[in-house]
Length: 326
Image (cartoon, rainbow, N blue to C red; front, top):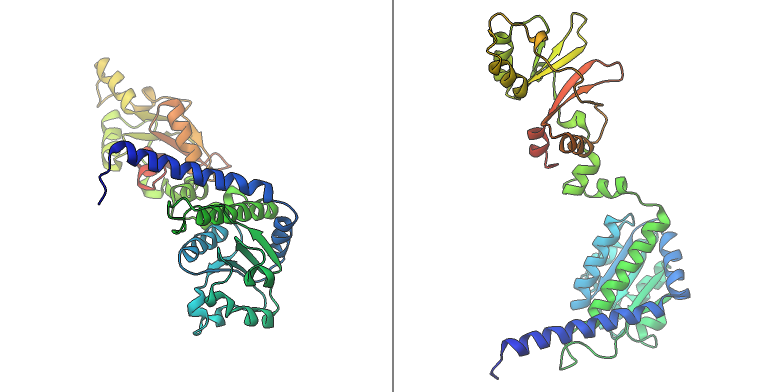
């Protein structure tokens, strides 16, 4: 094995990056009428976009299908070899196919062409050879060819798979914009991710409500209010008037001031010590927006009031932490 050095390692890596970056940059001038036609065909699909490819192209095809599906274009990957042994039944006349092959002559994909023609569905190909059997058989051909692979032997799929991946991303984003796909739509496709939670979870989904709300009347003595604070474990309590409307809140900061003033906790009512003008939010506000309010005001809890200004809940920072928002 030839001896390597840290210099040769980094030189190899930098050369690879330059070659793949140049291959990707060359794609831009190829985006034109064929790309627009591919987008139009795919937008008209009433079923699913089937993405297929063999070997390394298959790995890229699988990722492109996942990107399409997560950005508003229902799609899935079909292995071309498996399609010849039963999985062809996954493709219907309502679908369209995107086929990836750098050579455009992979036998497993070519075997499918007569079947796709019989279904009469659109076929978009990504190859490095428009004159290849796959390129010639497709309704739209997208050129993802490269002058040379980043592999010094010019054998391992490197630059060619990168250009195919970028072309797939270009298609997905063009379709996303054409469909008017929104951040809310994206969140619906990613409900388990951090972004999905930030865009979907509302205050009402994570707040404390009902008997979990720390609540006392304004005439309650401080000693009793402290029991409520301790029992509910939020470090604060809401304070309501005789009509049940929010009058204020009592927090650990108010408690420190009361203790500094050496007030008798058995004689002083909570109404004398509470803070008025508490920060309140609507239950339909996004939980992520509530977190920003907490951060901006350096507080750890917010009172939730409905449209009738009725006390509905309390949101604490730890609720947001548990929900994966903070």
